[in-house]
Length: 232
Image (tube, rainbow, N blue to C red; front, side, top):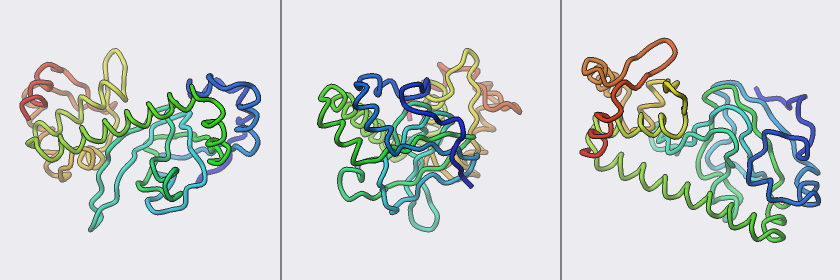
């Protein structure tokens, strides 16, 4: 279950808001803050479901969230893992006010809900804000293209190498990268079955490309993984 965070105060004093919002004037922030609210989620909690109504744009301020398409026979495809400061919502916000994907927290997360009509007003009143928002959405689309290309044209080794490199370079960015994603989620991210992921991870471990520890998957040979990703 989700609940409103008692720590949520206002957009002016928030240190967790997206850098995008720093382009807004005090009046524009006041407009967004009018009926904005924050919700905390536990790992595994659903944030929104594919096909449900979309009346807010969501700003992730803490944690990590997987965005995925729900397919037939419970076959899902994770196309992105979002991290703090990213905006969640998708194209449906500007087409039919529906979510065309689902979002679920993969670790304790906090999300700020901003009224969609007020957000659209700010886009119209602040061209620079609107331009950078459009850029972010375009980058998400390009990323989606890359994921579909990888999952449809690469062999299993290439797919999983590609997924691990994506997580290491864009999501879990630390001096020694540890990837905290379940084998089930890795399967849905790479377009593979869970059994196939387990088998390929075992091969990667025996070849000293990765090390699977309690704290997650540690990449030992990034260059070799890049070769596997490139060769497909």
